Length: 326
Figure (cartoon, rainbow, N blue to C red):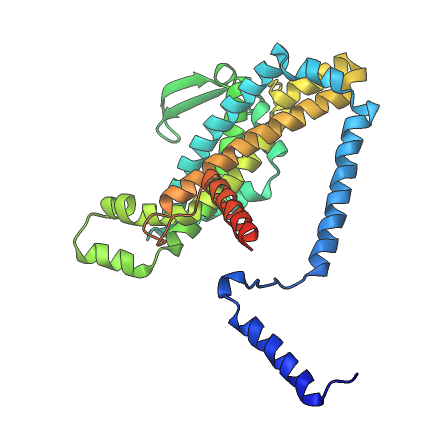
């Protein structure tokens, strides 16, 4: 038995009206489907799983030997030397970079020229060349003296006693680091708005006070991420001090690899993991330093990883409650 056309129309209108009258809380908003994103995610997960499976099952890595070498005293002694060289070079390099940057921005043409030449020279010469040159510096100058140029010397030093392996490594890395740090510091200072300089000068503040209390705190927001990149590069560059007879982390691994040639791969993996630990620790410190200097520049500070994790967990619980209510 067929229904009249009016009845069908009335039934459709009634269904539409019922959907409209449903409460908003009961209506679900479907997200936009992104098949490309899901396909790319699946491919990345498959490749990642294959990579992890290869690391775990390939006997060539010799994970038992990796565990044996990871905390051996010879490795830890090299790690301490790496930390010592990196810390001293980072501090001295940053201080030298600040002085070079201020000289480059000064009104003296002599200071600007000397700063530019220094930066150009040490950014052009490979670090390994600088280290080897300093290591053989005593062949050129057996003694160092302080006094009147072309005149008598007041103080004389024996270069062979001063140039220990640690001193050569720290001086070479610091000289190289200062050249790069100077450009980082100079870029950070130039990023400060010129109105800040003018306001400080209008208040009659001394130049030193202006730099320490007004310019430098604002410049550090730009300096920090760039210099941390330099610091991470410095940590990796400490592996070159092995060529000046200093047994750092890489030097210890290289020496043990020569003594135990069958353990070369696990020893290289030990060095790789320790370098990953060091650079990861620096990255964590970088995050909190950037967050500290972001005060006053942003309305709200960026959340910490723990705060992000708590927010994600709260969002998942709220979503679960909404699903259960529907």
